[in-house]
Amino acid sequence: MTCSRRNPAPSSRRRLRALSWAALGLLALPLGARAAPAEPPETLPTATLRVAGHPVAAEVAATPAQRQTGLMNRRELAPDHGMLFVFRHDQEVCMWMKNTYLALSVAFVDAQGRIRNLADMQPLTLDTHCASGAVRYALEMPLGWFAAHQAGPGARVQGLPRPD
Image (cartoon, rainbow, N blue to C red):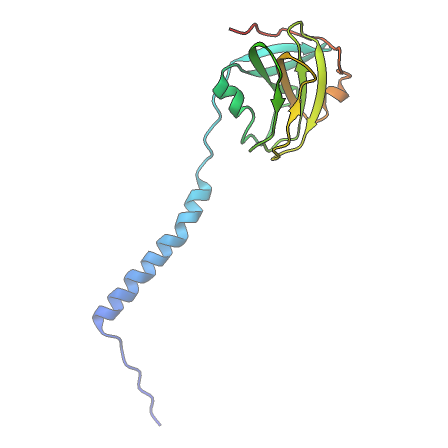
């Protein structure tokens, strides 16, 4: 018994080859998208603070857009680094962790530089964490930083910039 295999017509081979290349191109798209670097965070001014006598390097978020973005999309913070949110006037302040991958602690600080209260915040949640009264600043640090440095309510934060 003989078996014969028919060769596809030349136009069918070209079509098959074109479809194969198109499929490979579609497979490569997600790989290229994953390999693209994330957009770097905006470069913010920094302030050197002392929290209960301990040095802190803080990025300063003083505009509404900077405060809204905060530490979103960050994956790490250097030791003793954080973000200071500066408000023009004393006000009720609440923080959340939308698109924030770091577990953080926040200190709510009054205009005289005293910590009013602290809150621990878990990543990627919409839970709100609020000051116990009107404050001028909020300082976010890695989770547990304030406890590890004995910086609780009443502790002083020095070197705070004045709101514009």
